Image (cartoon, rainbow, N blue to C red; front, side, top):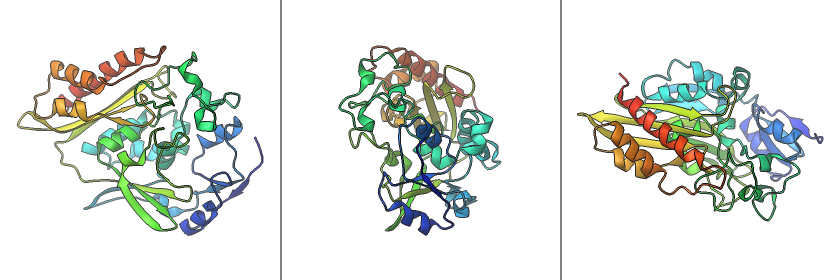
Length: 328
């Protein structure tokens, strides 16, 4: 690991000031479970790491009439055990329980999980040039290690977004707050993520001198229920090959306000309006669930060695839709 300066400011203003030196000079660190791996593998290097650990406001978790407010430093373990994550919000606790291992969940943060870098083996290898590291092409296209790569929305880079928390947060209608030199800006979490067609070296729209400070979930009616499922090679401590967050309300038996969001299949968390349209206004059934799964994957373009992810995704989507229908 190359040497770097480590600083622990006590205010958000100090943090933002320290970030204004440029992307290669300074970088944020929260729990560090993702960033430290990148540094050890010499995938990235920064002259200064700016810790958020002493910014107490980022650890806030409260609920009011505007919704549930989650600070960026709320740990994944807190989400796993938070008593307010029940009813419609229970899908988030369900997803948190499936993240990595207890040790990682104790250290990892909400903000870090949303801002993590791709798990692509080509990106993570210091010996492999790729588009995300300033290379000229994507070696994954012809390479053998494609299990964790994209089946849709690649646009030249076939890495996937591995966040377990992003799909349920998008399904819940979450908004993210970003704070920078010009103040705060809030946008739907779905718009926070950006694919390689926008900037191949980034996964989101956050500027170099901005900080993700909070995620807010709007109030939801108790009739809205959801579930999160994921397939992985190992039952513990692994990233999703495919994941899916599905939720909807049932008014007089018909599905309303449906949300279908996939993870592990594209460079960004992949919401499917097509599948949601199939579900809306219909009574849940195995046949409808299968139709929605086909609609969600209609535009998929798998690589040579990862078409198996289509079968996994179909099964998970249909299973999740059926599971929500049986929830009390």
